[in-house]
Image (cartoon, rainbow, N blue to C red; front, side, top):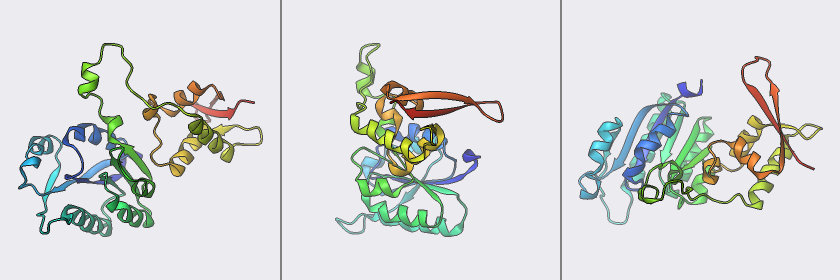
Length: 243
């Protein structure tokens, strides 16, 4: 099972806001069992003191890294060295790298070269090279369910989400066409998998939908067909572009 995969979670403490940790760890649990959880930073700095209780509550091990030289990011170097040690130990099935820093691009590429999966987590400011170097990239902003803006919003007010643009619809349509059968039908599970490969940061939650199916239905551009599976338990969903 996917959730039985052993994951190494490495967090850039200088780069990831502490307010996201709870939701981030809940998200990671969907992809595997985080058997290694480490966060890197110079814990002698006063600004990192707020992490103490959060780390205890989430069983994350703080890794001390002094800033030996001004202008050099020692935290990044420590994370990369540890990641390679873990990789060669063969104790995990995948990695989660939590940072919005493009310095981890080559690390993500190197890990994937060995056949292990890499999930990236960071803010929307994350540079594209790091995003595309991951198998999947998740924006922290969509995980943070309650923030000051949401708490103060009037009851019933919709959460701010991105619009489903014609460009997004064209992207989904092209992906459906890539794997459709002669009648134009494509299995939605395969569509979702190919979308993720093409665009690791694609996430239906950005557009206000928990899953891909309701997002696609909302466009009105696709036919939906639910079919019986051979096992008879869950319905198999197929889609095709409307003429």
